[in-house]
View 1: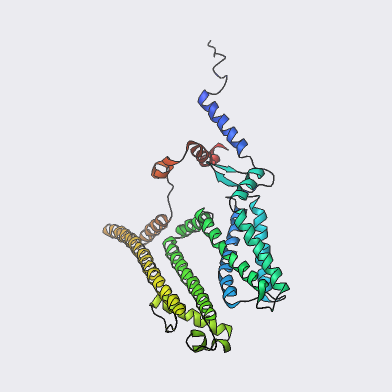
View 2 (view 1 turned 120 degrees about the vertical axis):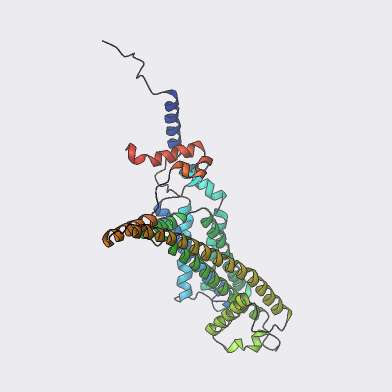
Length: 381
């Protein structure tokens, strides 16, 4: 007979014991409060997508309202749109106090820490913009129809503050909140065999959206130039030459859009500037268009070249396979089955190992432990 020493199974080794203590300590540090919301959760992601759509809406409507001095009279379209955006951003303001953040390789979900972090980061800007939304609504409802005075000046200032939301959009894109949706869509598209087509189409769509928005912004800038410099009694300006006083808002906007597109993309203006202000605006917009068009052309060329190279590589592989099958006189049924299966497996992405991703060697040990917990969660449970 033989006996086992009583200390053989007395406890885990010191290394594993330390890992357990480290994991429990980390879970205590990141233990969520009752109302805490993870920043990478699908609930927050859906709301962030709504934020981007609302930012896009504001970026289109706000320059138009500033340039054409549109007011939110009670019961009209601008009233309901201003009310909708004010309510939405107020909800986002309070929701930000309940959304965790990432700091020092961990997700902080404690309500007091989250609130303190938000007060020191985005709260000053968000609160000023939300306050300007409600202040603009109050001023528009109280002094609508008045074109002068301090109320009208304050209303314009409140609208200008909305432009600061562009920084929020840039920050949301840089933090990668929307990369999860794009990655999931691309993975599903690659499984179906049209991932490359979706990638190129998405690139074209982003460029087209950027061109349209810049053209819209140029139209608003053009009309503001005509209004600021537009003396009806003077014949030496665009305002009097085009008789903008008697034209409709739609015609004014479309004319400004035409000027913006021609000046930015064609490098010339169909209107000859007649004073220094119009000359500065036209010259500046044409110079901006030169750099913008050159960047657009280089981006399009890079996307097309990448698309052609990947397509050519896939075509060469298909031709080599078909040549091999014809060489051995494979019957048509087997020929079709092989080529179809190869096409499906080529389109799908294979599983990667840790040694295939060099960037994993750069992350901290705590993140490596959390990553392995995620990797082997389905095996251990």
